Image (cartoon, rainbow, N blue to C red; front, side):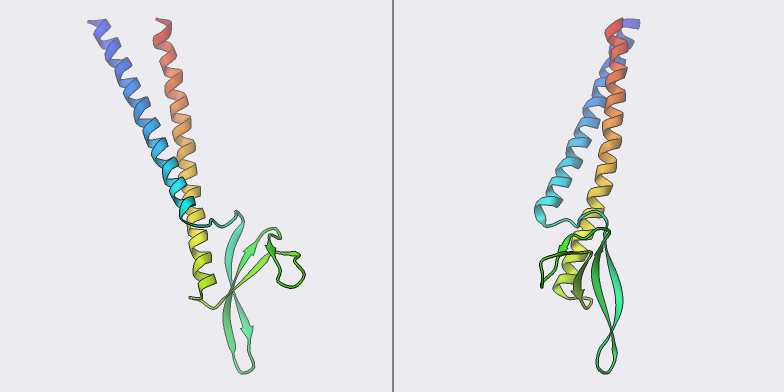
Length: 133
């Protein structure tokens, strides 16, 4: 009977390994699907709202702000930390929102994938105790 219990524990372990590996694969496919749909905002970029003064009144505008200069300028081709997006609802504004949302989703999925990789490593180490006996 102890042999059956040992076999059952090994089968359970292999089932868990398969489930963790499948979950990891599924999340990696999600990341690939997000990347294939459109651009992803670079790390360290976020949208900033600022008040601009017109001839008669003030307007709210938006810009994409990066921690390092990564956006080419229109005039001299140098790099800037800012990319003008215009007013809320403009195509550039909506595109930036989509890109930042994609980056946030990928970051969350990457954290889960790393947790699954650690779990898989732990499960593989656990199989060594059955190989010794």
